[in-house]
Length: 265
Image (cartoon, rainbow, N blue to C red; front, side):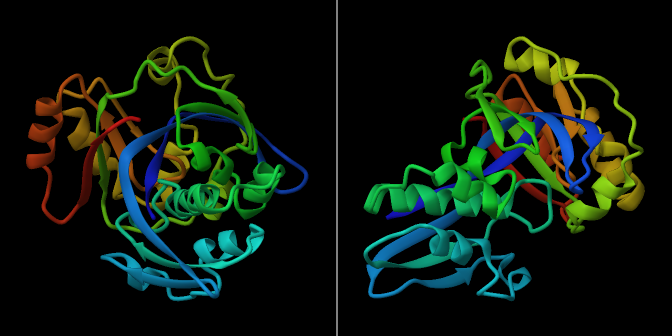
């Protein structure tokens, strides 16, 4: 069995308040790119995990890996031998670990079915994981786990992901948020929400990781109709009307940056 862990981007991310439990009240429009990490699984006597790919060295704790944790929270009669090809950078605002966990849930659903409480099990692994199980455009509220169906009008939109190869942990970015509520996420089509929305973590992330600014600046010089940082950074994305515009923009980027071309699902 083979699954793609589709890269997650936040077309809009509004941070509304800090909560007493240390989390934040969010309003976000999740979207997913038709590319990402690759998971291959085979039935086995017990669960196992192997990691390959460019960013495999960043995952140096096999027992703490979210793929292993996802396997542990799902009841099954047998095991799965999973190989994870790590294509997405780590600590990049793309929900890479959450996407990997979401792919595990889909693999288990295909092989053994999911328990009725799978959403609660997914949420225990991370706030983005429930959205990553289906990996379709949706609206997230609360900590991001309260999901509503999202408008699908941007499916097929060409997208370019760019990361300056600087890891950026989520916790410090949220801590650096200034606490100001700048208002709710707009309503409407996905395009209207994206254009009218914002990412409230872009400013604090840029303060912690100055390399984000040049990435945004270069993308804004292209033919993109939307350029924004995803999640807590440092990956930025650009949306285009045509694949040719996207590919032209990618060809002009500095060779040292990580890039990924695709389309929204």
